[in-house]
Image (cartoon, rainbow over all chains, first blue to last red; front, side):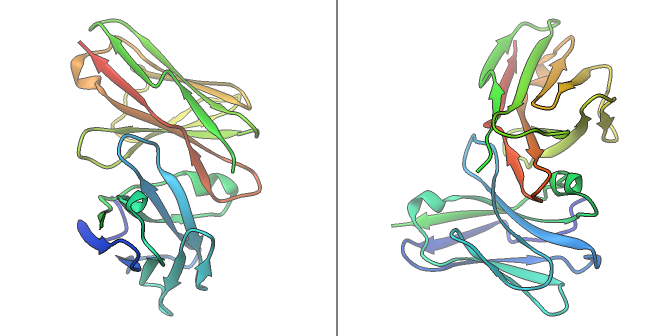
Length: 114
Length: 115
């Protein structure tokens, strides 16, 4: 079973920030938080991951609470092309292989509207 | 970023036949690849971990004799759906990780329709 809980759907206005929450209250100390997204009928795309510090890359920012029980993915300026299902996944990473063994939950379907 | 390619993108086959799906890492070597299945309106389900030069590790409930996985080289893993039936119709997706990264790279997926 997935170890995360996400709202099933969210709407966001184009150009505004999209904040996608994720609860992972049973996360272990060595587990990372990963975010992927899947645009309809395509393979998932990696967005970002983190352990305990906040992370930022060219796509998004990841904010992890101090107790690591929840996190928020932020798309700073959402575009129509960001419409997708966003998956928050926790996964152990004792070796590089573990980064690929992902248990997907139901994700959040983000709709960016004009 | 690294590229993982699947072939074919879609396939239609008759019930009872076998179908082979290829997953290639185009610009990196992948000692481990992963196979997922996704039914309409559902999330991805991990089927198996494909290990180069050794047997695949299957998730609980996945029939290893039905879904044959071969990882003969560091850049190629194949999934063969044997004696396919309509209930095997699904979107099959592979992924791979590079040694230096925790990020997984996914193929574009293969849509299998069994008629």
